[in-house]
Image 1 (cartoon, rainbow, N blue to C red):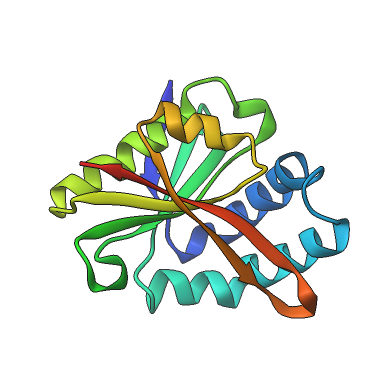
Image 2 (cartoon, helix red, strand yellow):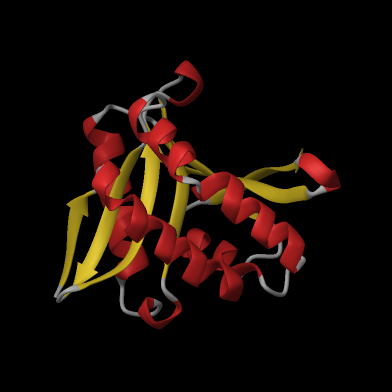
Length: 165
């Protein structure tokens, strides 16, 4: 049985482990190893996650099966001071994919968005990520493209997607 729980700063190590174990299979054929390592260190450093949880008011939820944590999602209500909930992160361990865990996480974010009276759930996804089709199955539509430049000339080539509520 899959169960959800609210993550806290005490769960940072678990979130890091999931990211470090899921990113190579998610991005290994899309990004160079150097960019992958850079992004993991930048986005999943303890201080970065603490800042997201405490200062930027990102909610993190974990999904569990038995005694194992299979993945997580993070989201933020009132994104850019609009009536939008932003799905910032959703990652599952490779062995957890196909069990309905991703759908359960999306459903939880959508439910929270509705409770917060959001009109839209938005996200960015790498244009070459196979998760694009998953998001479309979950009711998200591509609304545009966005290229975000990082340090060292690294580039995030994303689709902007939205699900209307």
